[in-house]
Image 1 (cartoon, rainbow, N blue to C red):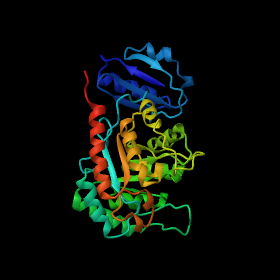
Image 2 (image 1 turned 30 degrees about the vertical axis):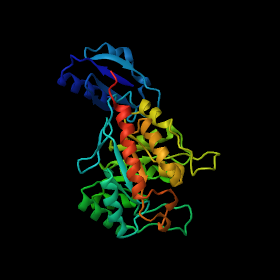
Image 3 (image 1 turned 30 degrees about the horizontal axis):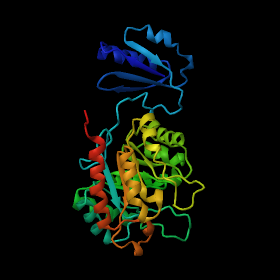
Length: 339
């Protein structure tokens, strides 16, 4: 349930109303936008009489919210959320960012790749120190040494980093090391213990859609994080598993505008995992940009044929540079004021 507060309401009246609601065993979420203030009421609101609330001087209107996700719901928070990724980098609400780098951290070549992607306009460095793999015999990542290399690159280039956390027991390590953004991969999209653990932090979370996850399941995963107090969530469409076998996954570009309609959280696209082949990555990135994504996550490697993981979908730095120029043109076109 949401209660829309009258513009004439004072701060004291709002605080009194929130206290009145919480005294009855409900949680609240107050969203103050440019044009209106909304109080989200979380709990079993079937016992609340909406007419009683609307009879109060402070309340303009009361609406019931049927969707099970409340904190992530745009009805609770009409204004776009802007997430601070560190190093002065913002995403959402008109702030567009590109995360780029190798699939996995391999060693000293990381800094060379990082310099190249930053020179092309990437603002966030991506790289996996811990790698979830389908096969237990595949490369699993460098672990803490990989975190060291990411942090060294971040310090030199003044770029925030995003890297995947796989185990609830590692979350505090990521926080202590100062990782700017923790990624929850597709295989952990419904690892509820992990979602709750990252939710206990204030570190931004890049939450990927599950391998065959629905849009509502992605939003409920975000709700798990947000319900623990961490509201800094960024959603990622990275393709879903369908009957099609010509690409690694099926890139659900539809999900980008749909998510913008349903939620206030930033939405990014991952064309690398969506397609699985270098030859398709740029076109999928252009489509995601045109669909209104708040950012992209793209894999870049200076020698893909020797990459330790996912070399088949990595762009060479020069191809990434070309993609970034075209992405800028698309952004210019879709954000232009034609009035």
